[in-house]
Length: 196
Image 1 (spheres, rainbow, N blue to C red):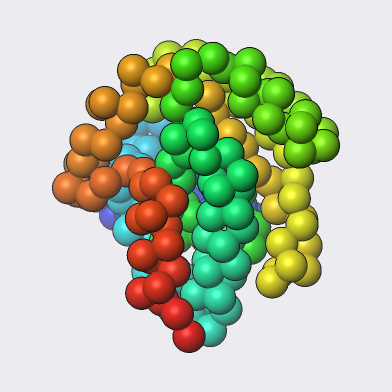
Image 2 (spheres, helix red, strand yellow):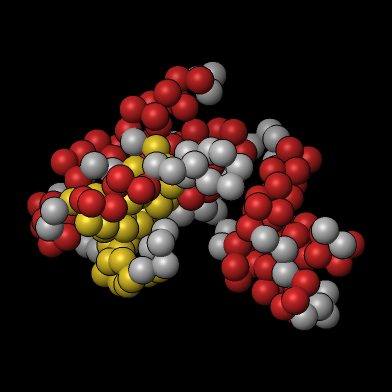
């Protein structure tokens, strides 16, 4: 990676941590801020590496407890939506989340409307949207805000609704050999490993 691409990754990482931006918008904004074109944009792996370095340097005293609080809240919703085979993904799963991060949970079910009905049964006001799924396809997302007792503030929760058949390919390792998502049992293990 050349010096400019590395600088974009580091600037984007700061934006991800300090402002809660997603990787894509952070990379584009960092490139614009540094006067670089899109040709110099780093890959997501480079930004994630830079985020981990930034967290270690500047957030080592706060980020672990924030991450734990987000994982606990994610587990609560995974248990509530258990019949839809929930899997945690994104920054909360990968361990790079801070209090500004949203929780992303993927549901794998036979009927996408049944997930909406479950939220209605829980009296949760949600906003439906269409987002890009992990294979590039259009996926329904159900988004809402939820109070985190540990953080003392509301957190965005996004439930992406996939077809049950999509679960088969969902657990393939990513480019670094890691599982890109985990079920409730895996989240419980993470919480047990990081118990204070």
